Length: 165
Image (cartoon, rainbow, N blue to C red; front, side):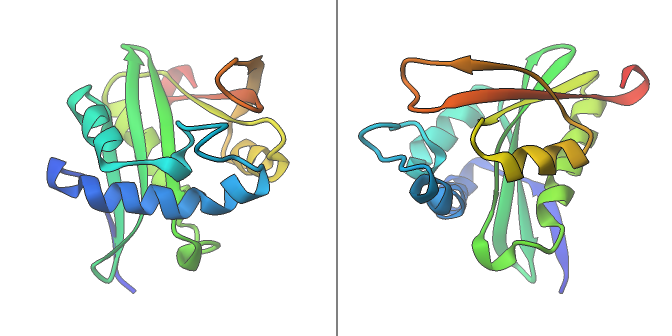
């Protein structure tokens, strides 16, 4: 299997939205997230969301294996020194092969090349396995938050990069 990660283009918005929606369906089911109670959850992702993000300088990277798009991750440079890791998605048939880790490492490398010294992420606090997975990649919890528009608590995590990391 030949796999590669490349920066996504504007022409990829429908493919990216499809990957994100399908990769997050199981999370939505597990935590009872619907379009009604959590309309901005990635399981409801549209091509317009992705297109808007790309126009706002969010970079998307797409994983393809044997020419088939099967994962993605987004990177937003929130401040010169901080990037946000967003929309990490691997389709269910491609999980447990190290692709999620490869996508995170790719995003970390890009964040470092942009001059960032920290990368941050927010996850559903109750998603303990995901938190442990990020901890194994060097992320540490930095706080939690409750937001009126979300039906769950958010755990914030961060990892230092480069020399400052």
